[in-house]
Amino acid sequence: MNVSLYLYLQTLRETVIPTVLGSMAVRSFLAGTLTGVCSTFLFQPLDLVKTRIQSQLVAGVPQSAITSFKVIPIVTQILRQENIFGLWRGTVPSLFRTVPGVGIYFTSIHIMQEMAGPGRTSTETMLIGVASRVMASLSVLPFTVIKARYESGLFQYSSVFGAFKSTVMTEGFRSLYSGIIPTLLRDAPFSGIYLMFYEMLKSRIKSHLPESNWTPVTHFSAGLAAGLLASIVTHPFDVIKTQIQLTSDPRQRRLLTSARSIWARNGMRGYFAGLFPRIARRTLMTATSWTVYEQVIRSIGLLDGPKRKVPVRLTSVS
Image: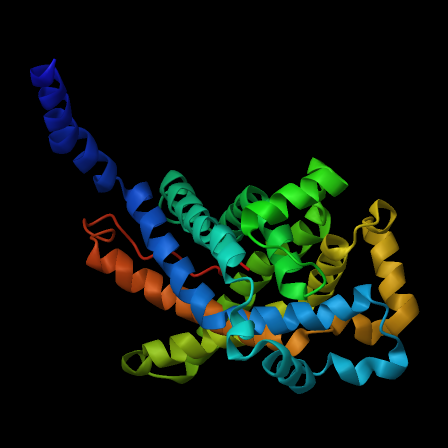
């Protein structure tokens, strides 16, 4: 019995584990999860402030009080009531969402790029980004709902498990997938729009600079600009998604109903509540995520071999 167990563990250590860890997809997932951890801790305060601003729409803040949508009053209120650590409220559900989400996202990109092979067109690359984003978003949507509620300050949960239990018991299992349509309408186009702007800006910069001057700094700048433009275009869906996920009224969880509610209370400006912190977070998170990811995949040998190529920069999970 002991001999059989020893032989089994020895076989596991010498064959199965090296095979699994040697898989490019597994390495890509591990690199992505590390990226998710780093980006979550760095940019959680920006995500929290954005959610707090947008949560005021649920409370019915009128157009006359639109100044409360500004960042500084929200940050001051958090520091006064919850101290500096309050800016990292919701970090645990964010980790539950971002870590596997980013890992799934990068792994999906890697697998689909391998399947598509070299010589991919811009359309194929864009579709890879969109498909990867959809799979990642759907996989972690329940954690996205809990994260939004944690950050909003409108719900008092003692733990992530308690939040899941309370939500399911009071609103049903379907509530964990509330906001699925605006989430996909936000995330999938973001990937495609980001890539389109990124490639356009990269081409223009390279056309004005010698190849020797095409440094990671200009690369980073193109990524920031692309993230800025993509964030602005898709932000209204982010506002609608947050409002749907924070409401306990099933009648208010419809896309058009939520959109009309925001328009009636705050007009066009309501669709851009929390735009500044989201732009800051998305642009910086995108650039940082890919910087960390590329360094990790080089260090673990994901790029080893003549056929391995650096993945096209698409975007990061929100």
